Image (spheres, helix red, strand yellow):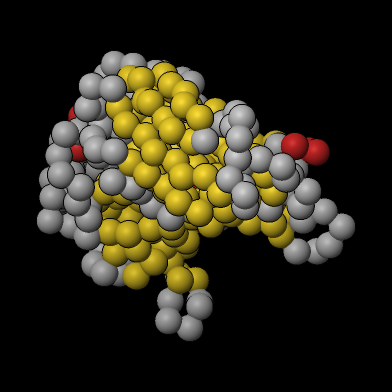
Length: 268
């Protein structure tokens, strides 16, 4: 059921690829209702299997008018209710209502989730948490997920897509490998701040920069080209919060010619 009281349904893919519908039901009054409620439940707790972060998602028009969409899969071995938080870029999301879905057993597929299921546009991130029968975050639950950001490929009937692996909130030094920056490639960095205060994240990516992220928000920034790049253009990305705050992050390299890219979730 979404914030307007309407039941939302997930497409559940069966063994033979046939679609079935898992209908929502009425929520307990104890369930978290807003982004602030949900993030406060998971802040400063060890990473667990009952919550994950899709660090970048959206329904947005990009370079050359390409319309990017985000498909999301959420899986659980048992029937589970999940809460989904939309963390819009550079916005105060603290009072934003959550959306709720019943999934499992098995994977639930949400096509163009940001626009179709959440009724949102723009760039942001998703936080997904499993709920117990009483509506609170279920510490014993096990869920997993993945996403792809895609657009119709220019000049052919196919698509150009970017695989997005889930991340988790942490307070340590988060790193990423396998990225390229320099002639022919650019890098965008993004961070999600689940805290009630703005945080500053120091980044090493060829050079150094600081990224300030508003409370309960996310921010994506381009990485300047280094004065001297490595012979093959490869870049190591390291990041940490100045005062040990929780955060999640990602880095994406984009080929300047083809527009194809690959994403790395920054991890401790």
